[in-house]
Length: 137
Image (cartoon, rainbow, N blue to C red; front, side, top):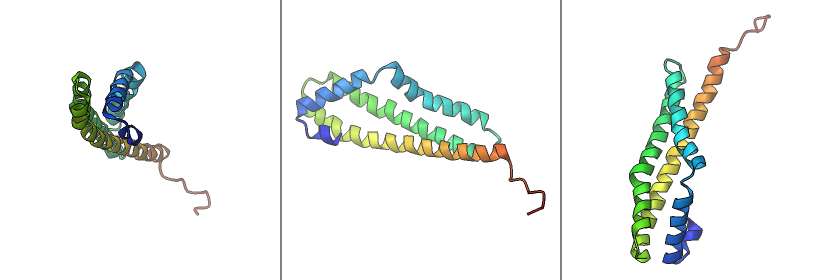
């Protein structure tokens, strides 16, 4: 985005419209919808386990990222696609989209961190407490 920010209004709007068009593909949708869906399955499977809070926190963070995308980013993209006058369109779009995209990235990063922590705790849970050596040391 910093490089694109140097472009004139017409180029900026055209590139963002192109990005918004090509991003709508099966690979993107699989990752976009798959991460929260698989996190939800993991959260369900983790119920009653000591690492469940990390998994639920990861799911909540993914849900917030999804909410930001659906409630803010997609409407901004749709508005940009419909607007003919590129100068005002960019002015309404750029700062809002960049700001909310950072929020979405933070939520996604928090989700990955929480799920990673949950995975580490799951591994420890699966292996149980360290066994004592035969000598008792």
